[in-house]
Image (cartoon, rainbow, N blue to C red; front, side, top):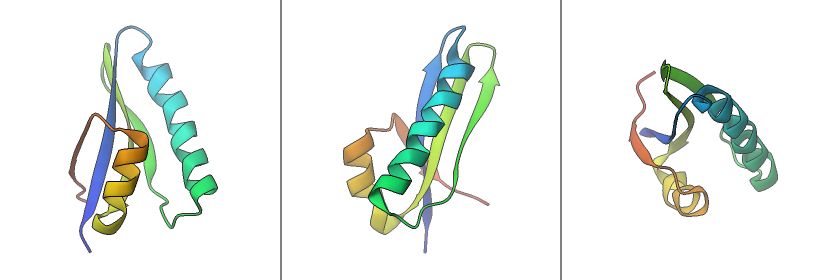
Length: 78
């Protein structure tokens, strides 16, 4: 089954800390919704741009996208 990476972008001097904190909320969502999701994370792309992300399957994408409103998505390559 195809996997998609839902991405939230954060910019500015506090972007990394914000992305790190946002990932905690993504993990909370997984627990509350009792999903089978397990891949989340955050990355610093440069000093002023960081991301938080969640990997979902095609089946899970639409309801999670509608609930959490990611900024963008891409195919997930392991």
